Length: 425
Image 1 (cartoon, rainbow, N blue to C red):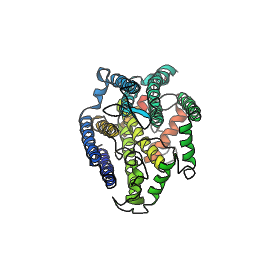
Image 2 (spheres, one colour; image 1 turned 180 degrees about the vertical axis):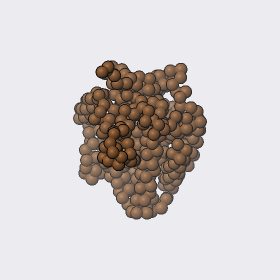
Image 3 (spheres, rainbow, N blue to C red; image 1 turned 45 degrees about the vertical axis):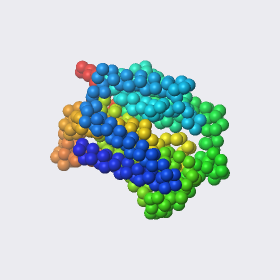
Image 4 (cartoon, rainbow, N blue to C red; image 1 turned 90 degrees about the vertical axis):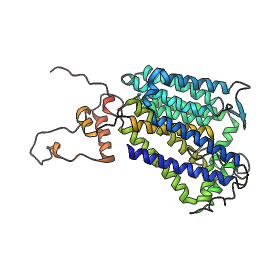
């Protein structure tokens, strides 16, 4: 796990460096060094939170009902945002308090709660009430409060992460599929009744037609991203930051980075995020603690999905959502939240008990390699045949589990499966 931790820290450090240099580049047009200093201060606070979460054992999050307390506090802060006089309104939305954006804290609090809930009720996650309705209601309340701000993009992000965590925890796929279809239909109905967001959706489908109106930001983002060429115009030499792309330091920071660092700079950013996803997935796969496994899975999905949405918005692959690029965009609340998530992910890697693959497979796995009697070296001598490795081995495991399992869904590890009944001969 030490190698995974080192790779994670290196990837995040490079992303933070690229974000800081790009933010400094925006000050050449708007001489606002206070924004750069605030970014550095928030990065330092996030680094302290990351170090604290990294050094502490993640298991303490399950003590004293802390996960429920964090979720309750997140709900209170989200309600406070909607109270007149307490919430801060910016650009037609009320999403902030005096210290930051509570929806960022709500993401992490919900991930911790669902990880604790799924680890505590492993044997009941196939049930409708305990495995789907109760955690779905808790996640739904957070989604509704964020949606009411209004922040449709973050609400969709939280809902998707929650469904992914429930799927890893073992919730029946039929319940998750039904909830996804119902949520998509409700979202489409609300979209049709909201003229502003419907116009944004139409602008996403045809940016050139709406380039002088609601699609101004997306269209000039594409121009900025495409004008960089292979190597870019070098840092500080971009032209679209001169008022053509509003809020380019936050949601559209990748367009400025693409203009000044070129195609190779964008590929570097994408590669770093892929590296973070692979490390997070590897940590979640190898840890044997169910709580650590679910926590690492939720954090990895959150970082990866948030980066995917932001990159999709900048490239006009997705409608404009207003979601920051992790570790790169300017924003105090998002930086602190992402650094805390990184610290918890490293804590799982450092303090989690690692599975010994061979020993675990031989003792607990119901689809370990069978020993069939037959001549040595023949096709029936399965025990002497080499076991498949890497991705192919995992694919064979999954196929065997789906073929032999009596249960509708297959958990990630074999110890999560309820014991089978043995009938007397």
